[in-house]
Image 1 (cartoon, helix red, strand yellow):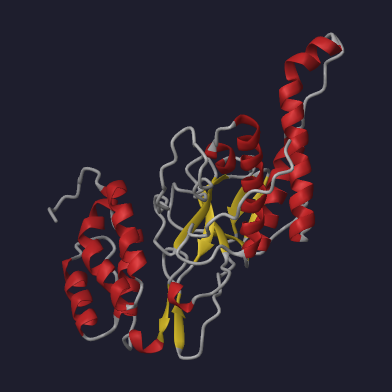
Image 2 (cartoon, helix red, strand yellow; image 1 turned 30 degrees about the vertical axis):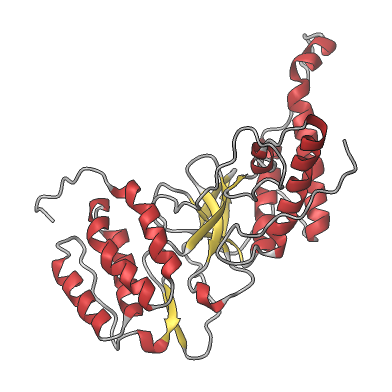
Length: 333
C-alpha cells in the first residue's frame, strides 16, 4: 500500500453538491482506487464503484484522476430513474436486486444541502423512508449489513473436516468479511454514527433481513413559507410555491381513459398551475398501465419546466425506454 494522497475528485456527480456524509464514503473509496493505481499503474474504476458492495454499488462515481489510464475504459454515467420511481428520487446506490437507495429531492431549486434517504425497490411504486438525511440513511444501511451478517455468519470448519484444508478453501470469504467489518467500524467512527443490527428507524420495520415500509408513517418535508406540500400516490407528492396550485385537487382517472384529464391538465398549465398538474400526472403514472407513460410525458415535462425544474424534465427522457412495452389496453390511446 502506498502513502500517496489521491488528488481531489470533481464533485459533479449530481445536480446538487454531494452531501458531506456521502462525500466521506467517496473519499475513502477514491483513495483506495488511487492506491491500486499507484501499485498497478492502471486505474480500475470498478473498484471505486463496488467499494461498499456489502451495502450497495455507487450509482455514479467521479471521473478518473487526470493522467490515469483507466481499464476498463471509463464512460460517464447518467443517473438512471429506477423502474416505478419518479424523477424526484435521485439514487446514489444500487442494491443489486433491482432496487436503489437514494434521496428525495422534491424541489431542487431550493438548493438544500441534504435530503431524506429512501429505498425504491424497483418492482412497485412507492418508497420506504430510512433516514431524515444522508448520515442517518447510511447508518440504516450499515445496520442492515450488520443484520444480514448476523443471520449469515462466516462459517466455521465442521468437526469432521481438516481445519487447514477447510481454511484454505474459505480464506477468501473470511478475509472479505473481516475487511468489510473494518470498513463498517471506520465509517461509523468517521460519520459519528452507531449502526446496530436491531436498530429501528422511523418509516420502516424489519421482517428478518427484509426491510418493510411502515405504511402508517408519512414522509414530511420542510415546507418554506409561501409553499405547499401535497402528498401523492408515488409516496413523494409535490412541493411547490402555493400559487402554483389551483384551488382544488385534480381528479385522476383510475382506470383510464386519460383524455379528459390530459385536456384538464393543459388548461391548468395554461392558467399557471403547474404544481396541480404535476401532482395529477404523477398520480396517474402510479394508477394507470405503464403504456400510458408516453401520453403523460409531454405535459409532465412541461409542468417541471414551468416550475423551474428542467433537469427533471430531462429525467423523464431517461425513463422513457423502460415504459415502451406492448400495449394491451382494450381501447387505443
